[in-house]
Image (cartoon, rainbow, N blue to C red; front, side, top):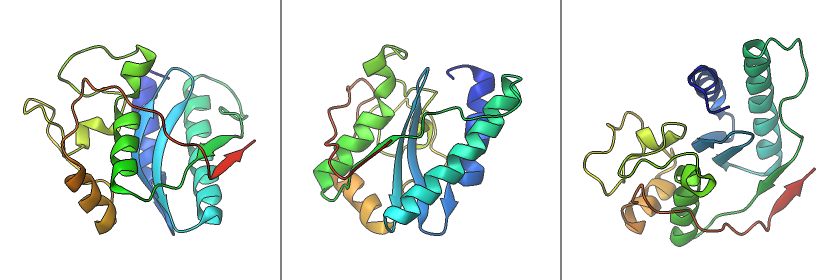
Length: 169
């Protein structure tokens, strides 16, 4: 999925499906065979429905790109964690945005991974990082928490995220 054509299609699917009633896509990272998403939801039902709708958009778009007629692109499973503290929010953002470094798919120092939402992230410590065009996340408490947590370096590797709340197969 880390090709320019797939990126354009995935970003289009993200734009169209990023906000639904009670579901908002906050950050993303595209890897070869999986995605890392940070979302804000009102409850578990909104999480399930929002991810299902986003998954359908992604599958239709990628199947079209890959000349497949139909079918799922991802296994029907995801890991979800409830994130409540400023530290957890910052660690999750760091993990998602710098996930390309962890997987070895992005090694350019001082620049955010182009296959992530890092291009729009406002709190990079490097002044030469790409211009920010969007403000994520939407809710004031999450924005304030990220601002209080400090600047994020694009060379930092993401740490582990506790996977406690939901594991769906």
